[in-house]
Amino acid sequence: MRFALFGILPLSVVALYGAGQEPEKRIRESANVLNEIMAAKDKGIPENLLEKARCVGIIPNLKRAGFVLGGKYGKGVVVCRSSGTEGWSAPETVRVEGGSIGFQIGAGETDLVFIVMNQSGMDKLMKDKVTLGADASAMAGPVGRSAAAQTDAAMRAEIVSWSRSRGIFGGVSLEGATLRPDTSDNHELYGSNSTPRDILQGTVKPPESAEPLYVALNQYAGAKPSSK
Image (cartoon, rainbow, N blue to C red; front, side):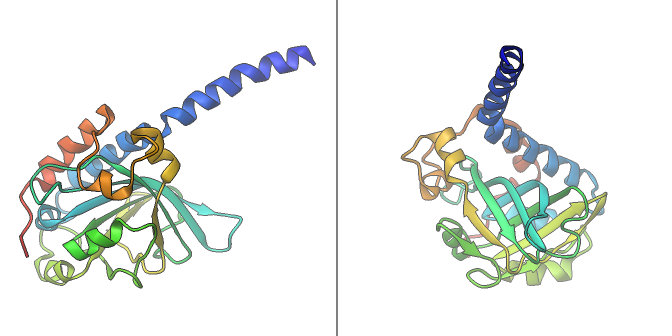
């Protein structure tokens, strides 16, 4: 029994250490996802949408919840522009849950990217819970530089989204999905008094792990958003 306990204890320590690193790992993974998607210039997210986005959300490796019929679950990050400038807020850690997040979701590992197009959508993002398609209008995003006609419609939506699963990238519907802050991870990163509004309005100091994400965002979405 003592040998068994001795073997278990180091694993427990490793597990606890890994849990403590999880939010920052997710921030780094989000930067990788954005870079990989945008590297395919003819198939990525239209840069004119990213340049006008108020906020950008990235959920690496969205999972199918096998214990809930058709359920989906993922954890990722959201950043917003600070005071309408080219600067970005600290990353807020978020959870996405829902039963009908597009046909691609759940087919193996799936990366989800969404952008918030206007101030109304940004304000809703700061609430405790947002149901996409109900509390905030949502649509599947257009793909590639040649999607100009579709991007006009996307400009009028509050949230536009895409997914990448098994190498297939395309717009995906998020209607019915819920988006909420991951309170425990946010408190781990920024302290127990931090709120989604504090984080997304740029009043909280970001962790060093966010630097690669800012580099990617400034490369693809660095232009100042419209004041409309």
